[in-house]
Image 1: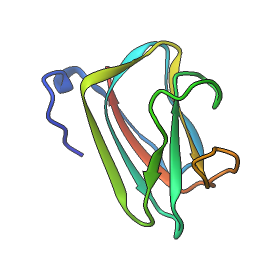
Image 2 (image 1 turned 60 degrees about the horizontal axis):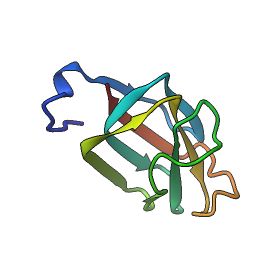
Image 3 (image 1 turned 90 degrees about the vertical axis):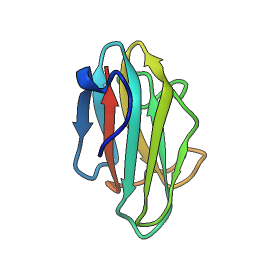
Length: 110
């Protein structure tokens, strides 16, 4: 994954195996870019929280992840978070059912 941003030289990267829930970072930071790959045969939704639990207000609107496809988002103005960065996969946009270990997430942050 390659993102264009003047801060990328000092950015940290997180890439996890296919997962339902994962803590990307604990503590404060700024999200520069995000790439999500859905390995399931059904649409999944990625919820991203400024928290160390999958609760509270989402950092950004839920991201629709098409079947077997990837989604890439680069934030021209980095998205700040104060507590931590955590994602959760869901079967629905309403975040009422688990999505299973179906999303591979790569995040770049400082």
